[in-house]
Image (spheres, one colour):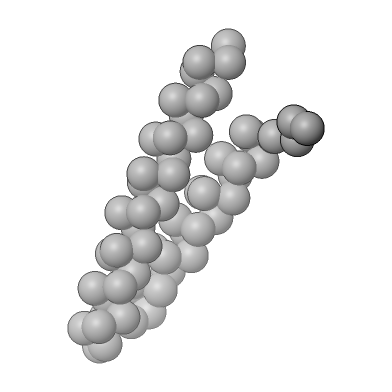
Length: 60
C-alpha cells in the first residue's frame, strides 16, 4: 500500500526545523553545548532539504 507523500509539506517542515534551530542558536549563545547541538540540527536540516529537493526535482 503506497501512502500519499506531500513533498512540498515535507519541504516546509524541514524549513521550519531549520528556522527553529537558527533561533535556538541565536538564543543560546551563552550556552556552548546548545550552540553546538543547534549547529548539528542545522546540518541535519540541510541534508533533509537536499534530499527532499532531489525528490521534488526528480518528480518534475
